[in-house]
Amino acid sequence: MPTDAFTLLGLPPRASLDEETLQSAYHQATLLAHPDQAGGNAQLSAELNAALETLKSPVTRLKHLLEHHSDTPWRAVPLDGPLMNLFEQLSPLIQSTQAFLKKKQASTTALSRALLSSEEMRLREALEDLGLKIQESRQVHEAQLADFDQRILQHDASVWAEIQSAQARLAYLSKWRAQVRELLLGLML
Image (cartoon, rainbow, N blue to C red):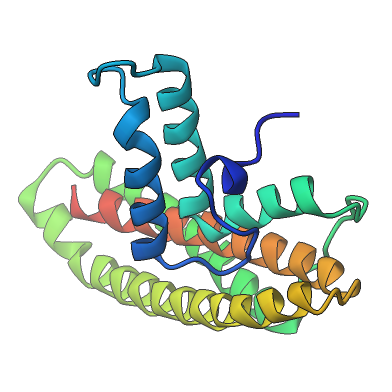
């Protein structure tokens, strides 16, 4: 099993971690390990960089926390109602945007591109609106992380299943946010 990123950076295992605390721990740990420093250690420096990347994102941080600090077995996490609602909005929007992008690419004249502009604007607005909903949902789920930390400190064994569910939900939301951004970028080109 790879090194525990929390231990490597001298941080307690936690679901919530603000960027300032993470960066401070990283900088402290890398002061002596950086290969450009006298007595530096390239291997340790690489491990510290990997630890930073692991703990930056709530998705990978929660996965790492589960792998290193819980014996909760892996299980599939079904989409709950609000996430299913977002997915039901995303799926047809992806399909219609991809179909539109093919039409846009096939249009060769200024007139044909101009005729597509209202559809493009409608798709862009729908994607931006959905992107905001996805971000709001992410924020709601990330707000729960501090509560998980309290429950971990209280040795509440039921928290691990909830962390597993939160990790899966955040992974879905991260993937969907990336898909929306990619489609918006495609519309801009």
